[in-house]
Image 1 (cartoon, rainbow, N blue to C red):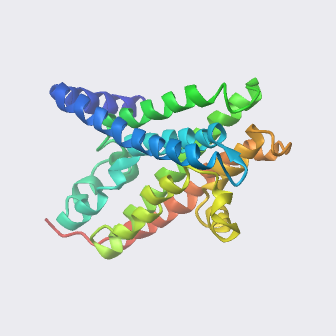
Image 2 (image 1 turned 180 degrees about the vertical axis):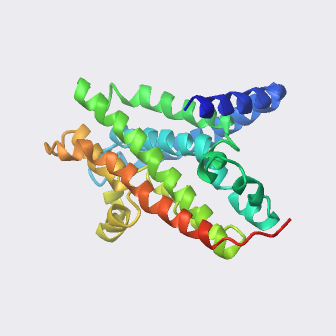
Length: 258
């Protein structure tokens, strides 16, 4: 872990060599995320509730998913540009180094400018927390932490699967954005509003609901099941098949010889 944080420090130091660019990018990400909040605000100003969920309750989903996705983008986005390593043959350099490929990919790129999205999520949560009707006990604060950590794990796993496909297609598959950026957009609202079919998909195929919807029901008091509170930790289990798929693709990789 010491080496990992050392790499992050180097990446942050290099990014801060261009402070104006960093702050402008961060501000741009803040504005983009904030427009999503404004869209929700105008929607609820007209309809007041969606499938029985109030504006303030829905903002919990917005803030959790935005926080989780931003953390995954910040620290796991190296997998998003992984296809270029396969296409150019630069992956060969990673293979001859003593550290694992996954570690090197994680430390190759960190999008610190995503702090703008993080700031949006924090501001929205600060607004929603005292108004959503949740009695914030130590246990529920713990559940909230599980939701954010589990969500970041799920999105990172999706980025890893995206990288795994690069071994077979060379180029990155843009349709995977449906499951990353698209899922982030879906996750701004309680997933049950999209119907039982989509809720099933996001529960058993792409495990978004285990860290977003079910613990959310526990937070707002729609269920007393304590299992819903620990369900977000299953997001870390999703990283296991994602890692296995990535390693499977890595074994199929053929060096360019350069």
